[in-house]
Length: 392
Ligand code: NI
Image (cartoon, rainbow, N blue to C red):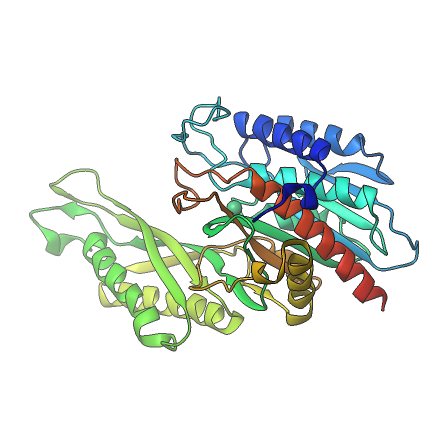
């Protein structure tokens, strides 16, 4: 049984719930989180941090002093952006903006990260704790912008988490190994020669080539990737043509490549190009392949995952740490931080007792309010444990 009083004091709980509901009502897309950012800056400012600044356009970073000035610094990151979805939850604090919604729970991440600030302000870690409110996670660009701003200079380890309705409130996944996939976006333009649809021999038809290519790209996972390794190739858009009786000049396909290890990721990128060019050549077309490199795979290293699991068990009890179960090949740009420093990304249960398991990015998605307190308490304690361990 979850005891909220043991996680976060009642006065702080009230403030975090109010903050979450205010952010949920006024959702903002990546790099447009001005109102959200203003609220978070204000909420952190009230805690009198040692430093407070705006970074990466709409991000906010605050630093809270530890007990020892020279001890290693640990960061806790929460993302704050919403999605272009029209909300259908019927919640009393549902989105007031048509077509924009916190359908991934980043409203809760923002609130629990402010909760971490409250908790480490009251009970400091060994070293300083830097709280990072990151914009634009959904576009895969926010973490890179935070790093480019230099906000994590001197930080020794970073922690963060995501709400997850596959798990009940009070359950936490803090484990080593892969947790999310890389996400690289491709666009392939096939060029031929337009003609009258009744005289195909006078042109070079890119639509027939595009049809062959959609099928051929599925052989990357089926025939090139080791079957024991997860990977995805999805063609998400196919565009060509203007009329039933016209063969167009070109056809364009776009899609996503997902992998959970760097070698598979590199193989998919390489083979995509080879197959696209080969299929194009077989149809007398040319292929122009553009790759937009997204976040890398998120793989938790073992020692920080161990610290996070111990912290979760200390806060919630021994039984709180549960295994991830089947891997989800969604992406998470927290992986960009783990390329620079050790850390751990957690999944934090957000399903209320008896509630349904609604997937993130659904118009009916919401996270139970108690997940705010769990996230705050577990991440604050993780920062304390990591800080003490790094201090040695
Ligand atoms: Ni998310």
